[in-house]
Length: 209
Image (tube, one colour):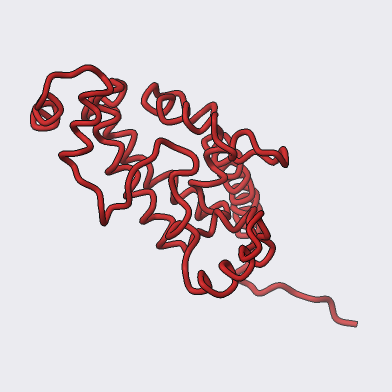
């Protein structure tokens, strides 16, 4: 019986390189998995004071304090499933870190509130582009019964071609009107009243950035 021989180009050095490359690849994937896990936690996300301001309403929401006991953390909603997709989301999210370091003073509650609508609209668009995939990790449309007798019909028929975010928003963070009806002037006046600012000061703060 003849022995199985490897092709001539597979030398001892090539085998060592393949083994080292294989272990390095496994280690890299494990690193990304752990990195994505850590950077998707509320503890990590609220390291910046600006995100702590965003987290305050979240901690009063049903996503943080659900009757079922199944708590959704930041990454469960805002990071895609799968190690490479999640890593890409974190990479793209680096622009927020850049803005935090070199942009407006988002740690200031007033500045944070003034910029909140833009952040909300961007997040809603992100969900819509992905057909609310992160929502569907926990919520199965056909299994949503609710308290209204027509809840199942609404989700299986009326909302059949819709993404979750098209109907369900303002559930976790501070309420922001739909982009189609949002009025910047009205929002600025509301923030001025909330923080005791003089009329027109919100407009000046945005213009100075």
